[in-house]
Image (cartoon, rainbow, N blue to C red):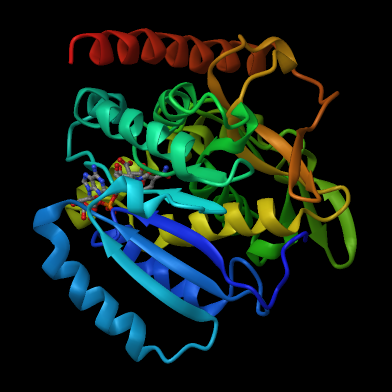
Length: 337
Ligand code: NAD
Ligand code: LMR
């Protein structure tokens, strides 16, 4: 990477007193995201009433006694939090409760991402890598980028890595292999119940030989219905059981997303990220849509040329239509504020 590894980078985590941050901060401090030689300064943003809780989180961070963790700055001021940051984890926002869809959070959360987009625009490094986790993640990333005109739009991404990890784990369980044997499953579209988890291009390594997942599973009905619906509804299933939304797995996915963006993907492998559509695969432009991407030197490229059959096309249309509707709704919400 271009960064001098002896100099710390500034990393902001919003919603720093919340559930996801509680698991994410350890990964950042331990070097498992930006690498074992990269010191970091942590900027922890939350709202004023959470500052006492944040004090407790900071005590725990200090007590980790981890050498890569340098300065820790707790703040409720976005202008402080985003100063000179190289990476931003935008987690802080209201999570959904049982019975809600993620897009129901737009009214509550859109303003947060407008304010933080402006703060990024004014204070962050121009090459900052922004990962939006707070829901509805894709449309929040879109809002944020539109309020940060001085930062390239490709620097704003939304998290669908949790969906990818869920899909990979579900396929590995079905095939009775460890999860690392399954590669290149794709999440297309929105981080919502319209997403399309696609195993058509996934591979599985069986006793040293790489095979296409669809031919090994050999059950299109399972792949097109049971598997798809399980991943689409997994977030709701966790909420129903825990009475709170996923946190440990979400934090792990956030670390995975940023690590791959920072360090790169292996040749021939891809990961899914919500990124601004450039029209690839006929997806409308100007929505943040999850595509398969390959990453080199800190830059991602949408993987091109994958075959899309009629079934996949119908799924892509549904999820892109929902994202266009969310964009309209976001504009309404922000205009009425
Ligand atoms: P949480 O309620 O435990 O924590 C959220 C934190 O954000 C709280 O401490 C709150 O005070 C803070 N916050 C609220 N407004 C803020 C603001 N303006 N600036 C800074 N901080 C602010 O919630 P959580 O479980 O950590 O989840 C956070 C978000 O992540 C939710 O929107 C949830 O739906 C989403 N999520 C996304 C994914 C994904 O895959 N994309 C997965 C899990 C959860
Ligand atoms: C998840 O996928 O677990 C999160 O987005 C939380 C939710 O609302 O489902």
